[in-house]
Image (cartoon, rainbow, N blue to C red; front, top):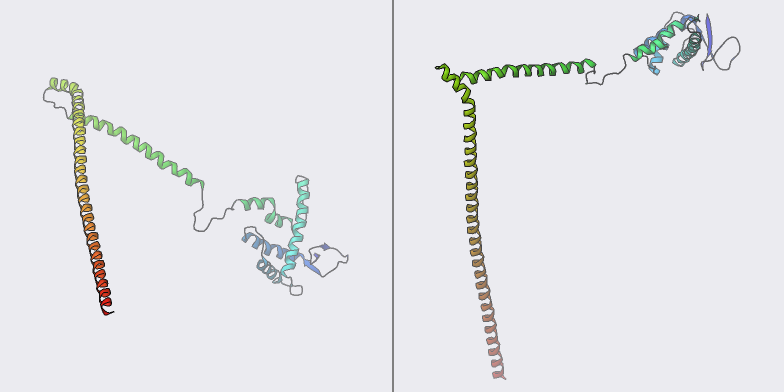
Length: 279
């Protein structure tokens, strides 16, 4: 059984068509579906690229008796497209009759396993490719994290319950047991008296501590004031010394200027007098 197909993917019988015709035998078609299906599954039911189609063509051409009609990658792709269209038509008839119609097309079952609804369901399950370097996320990770937290809380509660009796036992062991009656009376009165004494001591201690703290603060402020006064007094003395030195310097400079002026006037007077004497 042979089918004839144009390079564009249109199948026909004996009527003439334009362009070169490709002759596909049943064995070549089966080999084509097998080679294409293997790579389709390797690519997670994805689309084939040009190098994959070339591999499909090489597999078809490797069949016995295929030397006289070698297939190219384009011819293989066009043939698969034609088979997909035929499969969709057959599948539509099956769905329209709710399965009453059974396709007798020889390639229906094989293509249905590759691109049918069941195949798309299988494809959806292993989706979500993991990013390189990151572990795949899974629900058990979230469920297991709550178990240690609950266990830790239960352990903490149990430890708290076990710790309280130990403290109570420690309190009761501190009571002397020489005299039973005195010990019992002492055990009744000792907690209140001890607590009241602690409160009185605490209040007294706090009062003394607060008063001592305020006194220390007052002393520190007074010392700071004294130091500040000393620093300001030293600064004032230094400024007065600098001002006195400046005044003395200005006074000496003015005296030198007047001295120079007086000397120059005397020299000019002498020169004028000598000039008049010569005339």
